[in-house]
Image (tube, rainbow, N blue to C red; front, side, top):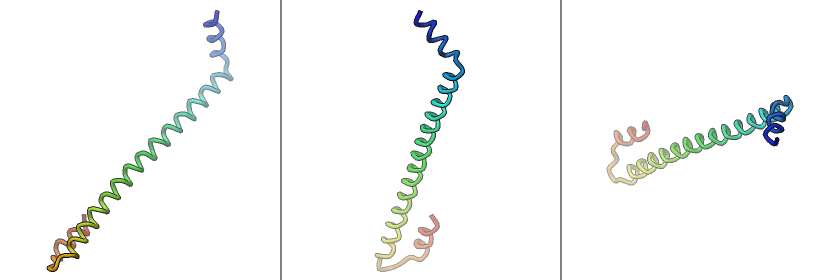
Length: 77
């Protein structure tokens, strides 16, 4: 008896439209989370690259004898 009512409710066009809208909202929400997670990972990667280059530049600058070739290599990483 309960199963018959659920089947009848699911056949209602308004309920189907409601469920579709809910599904799309949930899908958009999940896609947004994944997008920002991906951007965050890319930003973390960029920050790590920045610090590696910065540290290399600082070590070159701190040396008494500067090697211009190493300096330019570091800039083009």
